[in-house]
Length: 199
Image 1 (cartoon, one colour):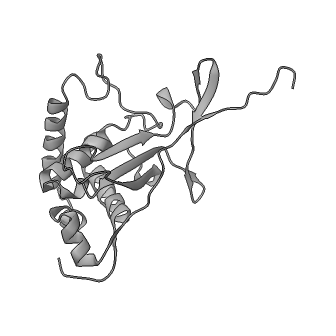
Image 2 (cartoon, one colour):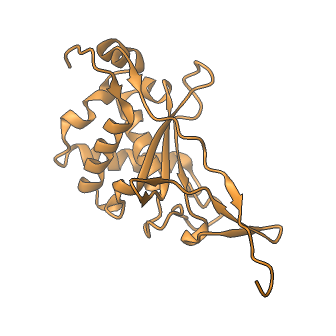
């Protein structure tokens, strides 16, 4: 990759990469990348371990618009881009995510995308048993994600789209002068006003 003075658009590049991943991965074909909102947050410390990325559902359980807590209806804060409602927020913790190995970056990427419900209704994929999000073993879950990533890379993946993952944050910053991304606050649960009886 040659040196350029143009800032590196992290969210835009991850969006393009995810669109290619979805096209080439049978288990992720249900994902409509145009309804994913990509964001970044700054790591609170320089530690390499900790939060790398997360996917936040923008609907309640089963895709419902509201849920009740203590008999009060709530809905997840909604996000619209160009009039289109987003169903998931995918957030990457920088520079920590980019300072992983190439393989671990791909495992993290697949890890988050696989959390998205097969119904693609704004909720998360849920497994049987007590550990509904990662099955009974996060290690086995990530091993499965590594297999999916290897299958993607050997199945016509566009190298130009994932080449940036071979560089760490400092290298990308040196090459582009800056790494930029959209900082999206974590969605809030908002109480829903209920009309009084007879209104």
